[in-house]
Structure formats: C-alpha cells, structure tokens
Image 1: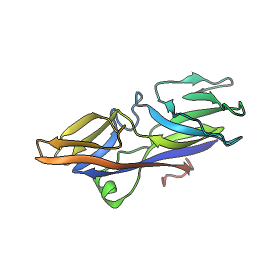
Image 2: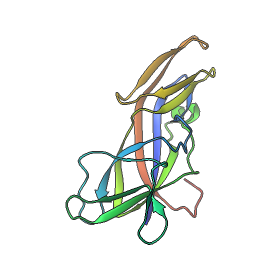
Image 3: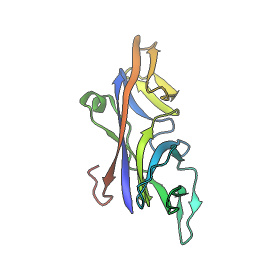
Image 4: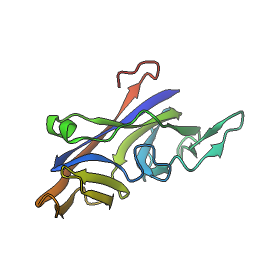
Amino acid sequence: MVNFMLYITAELENLTNFQPKGGVDDPNFTYYFKLKCENCGEVTDKETCVSLSETLPLAKKGSTNLIQKCKFCKREGTVTMIPGRGSPLTHDYSETGKYAPLMIFDCRGFEPLDFAFSSGWKVESLEGTKFEDVNLDAGEFAEYDEKGECGVMISNVRSMFKVVDLSKKNF
C-alpha cells in the first residue's frame, strides 16, 4: 500500500481558496488522472475517474473507490481515497509558488500520474465574490469581479503526486 497526496498550484490573480466546488472533501467531485501499473509499467491511455461518492466492496473486507485491471498484464489494482487531509490553494500559497495538498489516494497495484484539471472548481476573489463551477478544461479561467472592480484569473495550473506517510503530519 502506497499513499499518494495530490498537490495543486496555480497562478491566482486577485483570487484565493481554489478548491473543488463542495470543498476539499466534496463527495461529488471527480478526479481524473492516468494510472501506471506497478507490475508491468503500462500507463492507461485515458484518464481514470475517481470520486468519494462511488464505492465498491472489496472481496475480503472494506470498500474502495476504484477497482481496475491493467489492460496489458491483467493484474488488478485499487485506488481508495482518504479524505480529511486536504486544504484549498490560497492566494499566499500561489504567490510563493507553493503547492496545496488536496486529496490522498491509497493505491495498491497502481501509481497515479498526470492529474487533469476539469470542471467543478470554486474560488473566491480577494473581495469575497464567489465563483462556482469553474471549468479548467482549457487550463485557465478569467472573469471580472464587480465587487472588487478588477479582473480575476486562474492560470498555469499544475499538479503533482507525492508519496506520503500518514503517520507523519508534515505534508
């Protein structure tokens, strides 16, 4: 079992608290990323989708959010989401180029790669205007904040997966 934390960052112009629409533990938010088989190294052609609201029973005990077979070697692997450890990307983090932790994935048999930003995000202006259901399929978002009388923008969205030790709190 290896736990991977998904970290995100972006350039936030006059914006803060960038996160999934229902918060960092939004059960309906869908994460899209490719998977690499830890047995043979095959990478999925398309992104796999995983959300907290979709669970499958495991053969022995418990549940998981994804059970998938590698197309090449036919080995089965699972991805289980672990909520409660993420936080929104703030303006301060964005300004300093830091990444915000978003979600932990307990991966067995697979390694997550290449997170794809899509729709279902929310962010708020520094003046408090909320922008809901932000779509980042094109890689950026631009709007005008009437209250703050300024343009707002999300650009240069980036992500990375890092192995984390759940017994330590320093991630």
